[in-house]
Length: 255
Image (cartoon, rainbow, N blue to C red; front, side, top):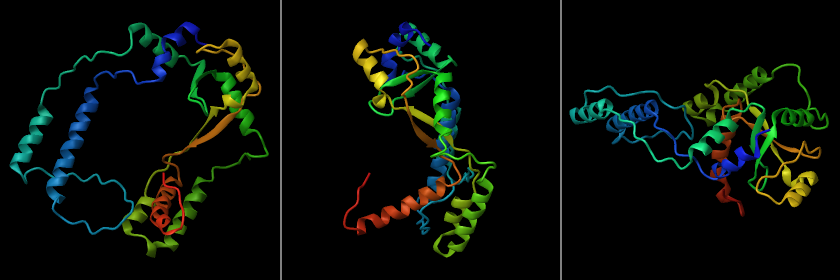
């Protein structure tokens, strides 16, 4: 586990973002994206878009130069403009930066935010894995599968969209079907507010940094992170449809 000295040095790192260092490749990529948007605006800016699609895949089309000399000159200037890295005043001392890097590079620990309260939890990696497996091995709520169901799910998804294609535009169908899904990630947030052992330790130590050894009654809140999972796009599309219907019912909650 990390030393209390290292944690004390980095306590304010959890409340604000350290000043980032200059990133020239990222800046050049931003300039290229900005130039592309200018060319798209020049080509399509005055044209009305009659497409009513709620969702669509991102276009990779970039108009060719030569239509507007002033625009071409401007884009060429900002693209070739020499980029000078500029040193910014850091909001962390050298000791704090070293301590933060030490925590980041330490594979023996895992850092998570508490499920409630905003506390930062530094856990032993092996203990965290034990707690995750303890939860996943609970046969009352979880069942181990023998094969990956993604292929069958994708087939059912395409059939569903095909059956209702008269209600969708071509771009909506392409958005829902034409993409490469990624596997979702499972992780757990420590429910420290429900652990009697942790709460007793907090009262006894009364410190900003509280240490306790492997609390047996600690539970995790399961989180499935799937921003590009197989059903994420369909969920996103349905959410957009429902948003238009909500105002027509007597009562609803708006996020």
